[in-house]
Image (cartoon, rainbow over all chains, first blue to last red; front, side, top):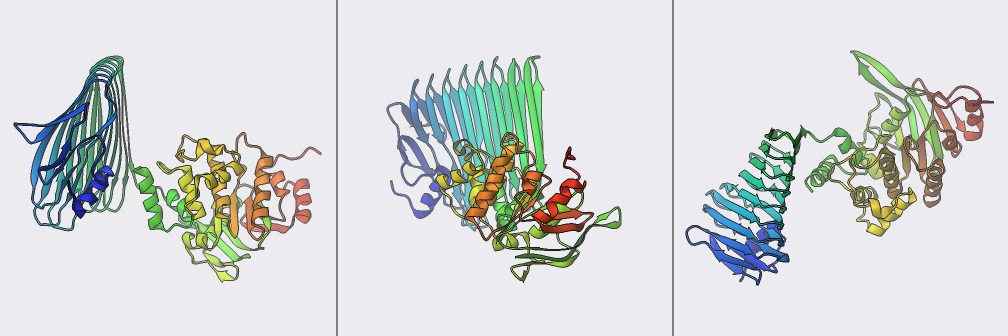
Length: 307
Length: 242
């Protein structure tokens, strides 16, 4: 498998890859599979009816990883891809997804990845997803990911979702349903520039007793960009849910935070927090007393905030 | 040497100008430790913020080693070698202790070097280096990290605004030791400390008393300190039982 310069740069941005990853992988470029590898415990098979793959992770698989990066370098491509992950009992794996679009042309490029995760009893998944755009064409770089997670008893999933740069337009939808003692942790980092828009919607159901969800988003809106964060947690059982949206706005950036909680059980304990504001003046002054310019101070504060 | 020439500062208070600093003139020589004291609300912190450039005077001049810095920004003054330890350390989401120490020193400090700065303020470095500078740290811990940053800057002029306030379990004598070490490692650096505490007044070469926005007294410690202890010049210090 050979990569060109742009593919390599995108792969590095979204998956910190400098070539073919270790373990199982499926690398997709411009709507074609560039390479694929299954391992003894992780089997990747292409879907027959639609574009996408099935990833089967056998019960008890430990310390293994799956990389499924997507890169798009042709202008004007639009695709929807369906990837289903079946994670066996007590498996413990890292899944690295992510999509990088380089659009130098005038046509809009769009990748809509629909990822479904089915975690069996006691399975653990750390899911890392980075979205990135580059290129100086007039065409937009659009990403509309849908992530669904179904967690059986005692399963745990941590999602780290990051979109820092270059994506013109995104609507992110994340749905989850948790059985007894299942646990979901979401750490989302979003930064938008210029005229970009980002909408992030969460709908998490705490169906089983002892289940818990912690959905935390940190967002920065610069330029004329707009972001909407809409997080809903429903507690149908004795459970614990927490959602937090912490945002910084700069220039003419706008952010709408819509946290919502619904408790259908008297022992469901649900909390939401939301805060939007500009960078605190005293933070800028403090870093300036260390010799940073105002712009450098801003950069440090934002980098830290989105870390 | 830092020179303040007839420095004044005012804030607008319900439409009228309220003067906080009224024509202060002072000289702070290199290598000296100067403690600024006086009653609360007298203008001590404002004076320190004027020196750092956080506030701008309405009249008067500030000179550093002969150069007029009155119109320079905070950043430019910091680059010239002025440091400022805040009375209330600023918190950051996401920035870590080591990030601030690196920014303060202006170098990509190794973890080992960063640890030395933390150890000098009595913090077990290993436990702190990767901590975020947020509300998970106590006021006292933040304060000591703030002091470590100033040590890391190794400045021409280091200003401490009430360094003893809220240092919790860490003792006063350790704080005094820090100032002693600073002087040893940076003998030409001047240190300005705003404080009410007798033990800090005791390490001064010179003491300046600021009251109602003016210099009420200024001079060598042995000239000023006895009068402070016998009169009630120092509001904020418990009167001594003689």
